[in-house]
Length: 82
Image 1 (cartoon, one colour):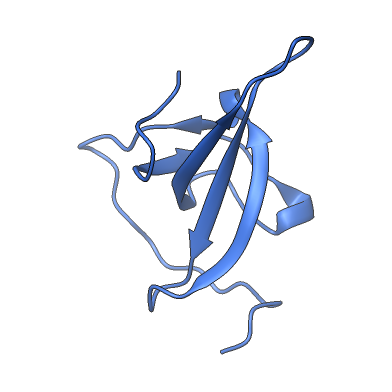
Image 2 (cartoon, rainbow, N blue to C red; image 1 turned 135 degrees about the vertical axis):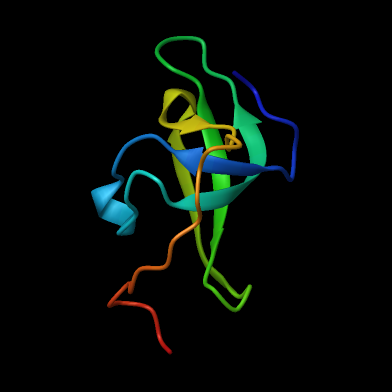
């Protein structure tokens, strides 16, 4: 799956090195093709105020489009300045 650029995506798994969890939302920025292995995606993550808090690279299989039956939730990320 390759989403439309600048569309909202949902993580399907935890990304511990970026302090992200399955279900977190992000903005899909770009696709990273590879010759061997799995392609990647560049994502920008925002806090509840709409401020950018991270830009991360994840495997393309770690994201999916949001679904109508998903509900957005809020959680505290300890290493982000308030």
